[in-house]
Amino acid sequence: MAVLVTGGAGYIGSHMVLTLLEAGHEVVVLDNLSNASQESLRRVELLAGKAPVFIKGDIRDRHCLDALFAEHSISDVLHFAGLKSVGESVAEPLRYYENNVAGSLTLCQAMAAAGVYRLVFSSSATVYGDGHPMPIHEGLPTGRPANPYGHSKLMVEDVLRDLAKADEHWSIALLRYFNPVGAHESGRIGEDPNGIPNNLVPFIAQVAVGRRDTLSVFGNDYPTPDGTGVRDYIHVMDLVDGHLAAMQVLTSQRGVSTWNLGTGRGYSVLEMIKAFETVSGQHVSYKVADRREGDVAECWADPTLARQELGWEAMRGLEEMLADTWRWQQANPQGYSD
Ligand code: NAD
Ligand code: UD1
Image (cartoon, rainbow, N blue to C red; front, side):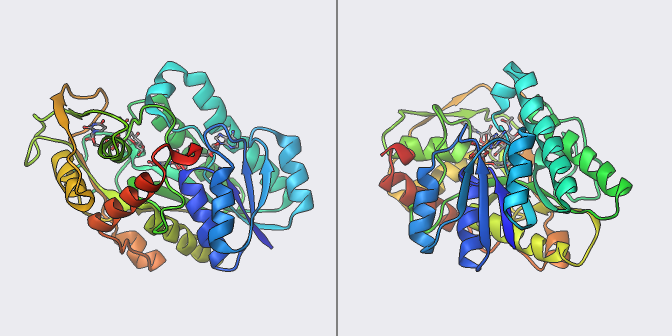
C-alpha cells in the first residue's frame, strides 16, 4: 500500500514525502507543478535514498485520479495541493475556489469511487477568523476568514464534515496549521516562494542573503508587547511529524477530527528579526510600514488536543527554525533555480 501526497513537490509536501520515505512508506506524489519544481523531489530522493512515484497531474482531473487509484494501491491521502497566496486569492477568487474547493471535491469523489477513505487535509488557523481570546483551541467556533483563500479552506472543512456525517467509511483529519517555517536540517529542501515573498520568514531570509534590501514591518501600533504582530511559528519538520501521527490515529477511528498544529508560543515581528540576526550573524534592515489589510494583532495555538490525542507536540524551538531556514537560504540563494 502507498500513501498519496497531493501537492507533494511543494514546500510542506516535499518535507512530508521525505519523512514518509524515511519511515518506510511507499509514496505516490500528484502535483501539477503550478507552484513547485520537480527539483525538490530529486533532492528528496537523494536524501532518502529512494524515490516517490511522481505523477504530473491535477487534482481537478478526474480521469487522472481514476487512473492513479487504479494503478496504485493507496491506503491514505495527504492532501496538500492548493493555491495559498492571500493577495492572489483576493484578485482571482474564482481560480482559488476552483482549485482549492472544486479540486478537493473531485479528489474526494475519486477516493470514494476507489474505496479509499483515509484523508488528511491541510487546513489553516485562518478558519478561526478574528476576535478570539488567545490561545486558540479547536472548540472555538470558526469565523469568517478575511479572504477567499481562507474561505476556501473553511469551505473544504465544511464539505469534509458533511461527507463524514453522510458516509461512515470516512476517517478524516483537518489539520489547522499555524505558521509553518524552517527547512529540512540538510539545507537541501526548503521554502522557495515565487517572486516577492508574502510571508515574514522567507522575506527576512531574502534580506539577510542580500536578495532584497529592506523588510517592511507591517504596523507597530498593535496591542501587543512591542506593537508588532505576534504569531505561532512552527518548524516544518514538526508539522510533518504531526501528519504522521494523525495518519496513525486515523487507522483506528472514523469520522472527522480537527487538530491545531502549532507550538503554543507566539513571537512578535521584532523578536523574529532579532532572532534571525542572532542565528545568521547578518544585519536585517527593516522599516516600519502601515498595517497590512486583513492582519490580526496576535494568533497562537493551544496545542493541547494534539498532544493528548495524537501524542504529538512540536519539539523544535525558534532558534532551530531560523537556523534551518538560514542554512537552506544560504545554500540556495535563488531557491531551486540555483
Ligand atoms: P506550496 O504552494 O509550496 O505547495 C502546494 C503544492 O500544490 C504545489 O507544489 C503546487 O504545484 C501544487 N498544486 C496546486 N494546485 C494543484 C492542483 N490543482 N493539482 C495538483 N497540484 C497542485 O504550498 P505549501 O506551503 O507547501 O502548502 C501546502 C498546503 O498547506 C496548502 O494547501 C496550503 O494552503 C496549506 N497551508 C500552508 C500554510 C503555509 O504557511 N505554508 C499555512 C496553512 C495551510
Ligand atoms: C499569512 C496569511 C494566512 C496564511 C499564512 C500562511 C495574510 C493576511 N494571512 O498569515 O492566511 O494562512 O500566511 O503562512 O496574509 N509581516 C511583516 N512584514 C512582511 C510579512 C509579514 O511585518 O513582509 C508580519 C505580518 O504583519 C504578521 C507576521 O509578520 O504580523 C506574520 O506574517 P505572515 O508570515 O505573512 O503570516 P500570517 O499573516 O500569520
